[in-house]
Length: 146
Image (cartoon, rainbow, N blue to C red):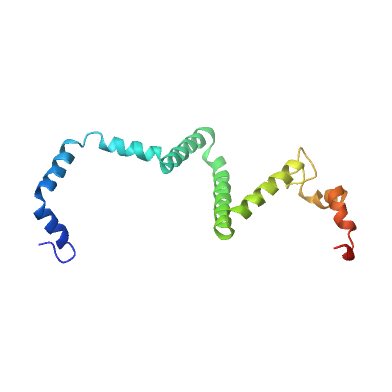
């Protein structure tokens, strides 16, 4: 009747008909609102919250920007997140976190890629480091000192 792989299931159903009838009655009478309860559980989960965030970001993008204006920004952000995910997957979270914090510190100090308030930017890092007292000490070290 059920075959070799499902014979235990068929035997259980045939031997426990009262349980099957209870399950059938419960599902037939208690179906109202079950989908809504399941949806509420989903929306309260991390996946549900991320889905809501994505939905709100899409709404914001569509109402705020023209499609041709936002496409390059979305592509850049997608590539940046993909790169970050790859880095974390390959080298772990800690080095990526340290690198990000280091980049933020450099940017805040004016030595970052974009400079601070029109600051020196990436091309001025070496001259700025040479002027810094802490880094000048390393430049004055001789091979015997190490």
